[in-house]
Amino acid sequence: MHELSIAKEILRIIDNMQAQHDFKTVAGVTILAGALSSVDPHSLQFAFSIASEGTCAEKAVMHLQIEPMQYICRDCDNIMTMARPPQNCEKCQSLRIGIKANSEIEIVSLEFDDDKN
Amino acid sequence: MTKIDMKANVYNRNQEMADALRSRFTNAKTYVINIVSSPGSGKTSLIEQMAPRLMPELNLFVIDGDVETQCDAIRLQNAGIPAVQIETHGSCHLDVPMIEKALTGIELANIDLLIIENIGNLICPVGFDLGEHLRVVMASLTEGEDKPMKYPQAYRKAQVCVFNKIDLAEFIPFDMEKFQMAAKRANENIDFFDVSCTKGNGIDQWCSYIKDKVRQHKSIQP
Image (tube, rainbow over all chains, first blue to last red; front, side, top):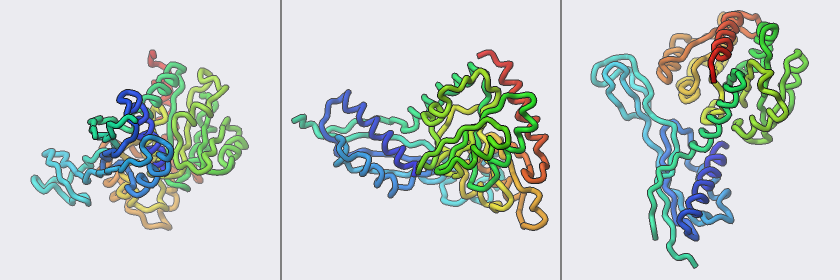
């Protein structure tokens, strides 16, 4: 459900960009979401398709990339990319494992048609 | 076709609004806590237990968030606790504009402690800073010890975990060590308070912690 709020904010940022760059339609938007962003790709795509109706981004394709989950060893700072938490550090065997992944959501880039007619 | 690189964080605007609201709270010397949990962990019960211990000394105000009904605010009002309800009618989390609207006509300078009871949900409310000074994640014995593994972000974004229903420990198996280890994996610095909102265990310690926080907050020069 929070995907709708996220989609609306993405559209608000695109709207601001439109004022700066004066484009007519957005062809694509690339989004990068942290592993802990709790973004469900289908929900976000769906929310974006509905919320963008009637805006310059209504035909835009959303390229959504979710970062992989990462863990960090709190003793030797070893970073491990894996879906599930390891029992211990692969390098130093420490049991002090923390979560490294982030929760941010970023609009990486925007593609738009130059035709202003 | 033109491509522009943006690197625009989607949460930036919410963060800016939350920071502005936090400054407003700080200037008014109102200490604000935001309680996040699954439905049924005991958020309203915790506030009911806190109120009689805090209200002789502090002016308390509660904002209660639910998808539907005024039940919780009415429950608190019936217990003599000043409270307003936000009914989101579908939205799964509270956000800054909802809090600002709920506070319309409320003189913040008259409130020492504002408790925001978020909507029972361990996903959506977690990403939305409400301008609070303290984020509390609540859990309870009946939910099982795997909650911090399933919802690590709820623990990462909180400073304190209030663990409720400890009076049921003799009836329900619960691996406390596993629970705390998973919570620490998400957030190494999280503090725990074990309570029973039906029997009252641990509530005094929790309330002294909050009273200290409010006192410290009052002494900060904005």
